[in-house]
Image 1 (cartoon, rainbow, N blue to C red):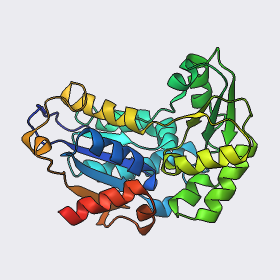
Image 2: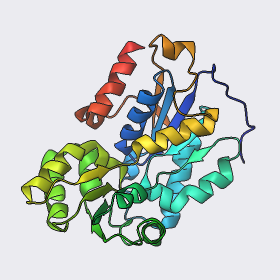
Image 3: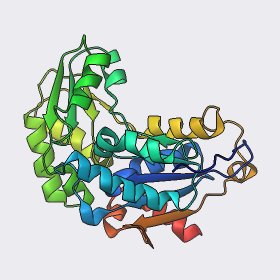
Length: 281
């Protein structure tokens, strides 16, 4: 059942929840903070159930609902599904339960802007998303005139989740080996991948490919969440807290329970920035 809608004007303090199986939500959380530094953040995940990619659509939907309901208990103004797999399988179900009271924003791989720049495009994604009807439909709708190669990246999201540098390097190298040499754009089709964008570019260079433009989803989904809340471009007319440089509060939910950021989050700049927010509180 959806919540009762409540108005949010430009002077209100915004609270945005983000959900994912694990720490892939860090990139979008960082983007929200950059666009709206005074926003309160609720990060809801269930790392014990990772990875979601190999699970059935029904299982992913059930787990995504549990994570989303835990976030909704904290009465955010919007919920970002910061997970491509959950967006593929559970977006409609989550919207049916939570909207219109709680706007739900899914994550869409940045295929459209990547294809608009012209030239061959590669999409790195989990094996479950690669070749899925959802991704194929995006390619058909937004990249029908571009040469697109779908590249599965088995194990990469899990390696990023655990900050396993050796496993990250192996998975990235394997994906780079499957990537055509003439690509001009590389779409990061899993939110976890945005945390290791620099390592991906390094691996592509080592594989002898020309350095492509990278396309992630974090900035776009953060901006869309803020538009859904205030009905205006992100950052417009922010509150006195934002003008004074005051930072919002952070709540972390792991399996529905309030917790600290998982240690692996601190391996990434986005996680360390959020840890600084906690210390400032």
